[in-house]
Amino acid sequence: MAGADPFSIALLSITAATTVAGVQQQRRATAESRSARRAQQRQASLQNARQRAEAIAAERRQRAAVIAQTEAAGASGSSSAVGAIGSLRSNLAGNLSFANQIEQLENQKQAHLNAAGAAQSRAATFGALAQLPGQMGFDPGALMRQAFSQPQAQAGMGMYSGMMNSFA
Image 1 (spheres, rainbow, N blue to C red):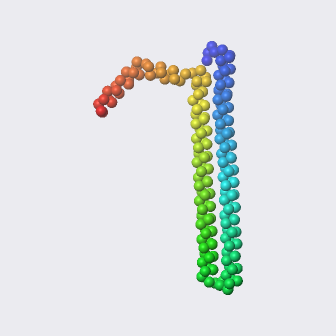
Image 2: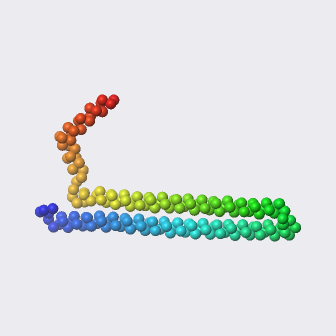
Image 3: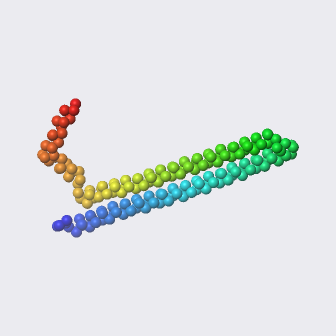
């Protein structure tokens, strides 16, 4: 940057600083988003645990009611009483299994959301870094056009054009 005026140097410095600040803010936003998803996952787990406890309590109440009814009828050891209690336990097991599957799916969803957030953060970082040369006054597109408009580059590409025809 020999011979650059102070205004240009200051402008380039500000551009670089704002790019770095933008990348840092994107990382901070990603971390906050990840933290919010973890809190949401803990909330879903607590709700799931409460639902399991409520299902267990409901099964116990129903089982106690069946036992009380069969004892009042004098059929406490009957096959119908045993079958009713077995049915209650089977329903409870099915409900608990469903709750566990829902929790596992919620955990998988959160893992995918975390991975997506991390990928978005990396993409934003690379996007900001890709814009940095342009912000610093360089034109990468012009450099590429210049590199590929050179006679040597065109001559080098010519040897490959004949190869395409030989495979056809």
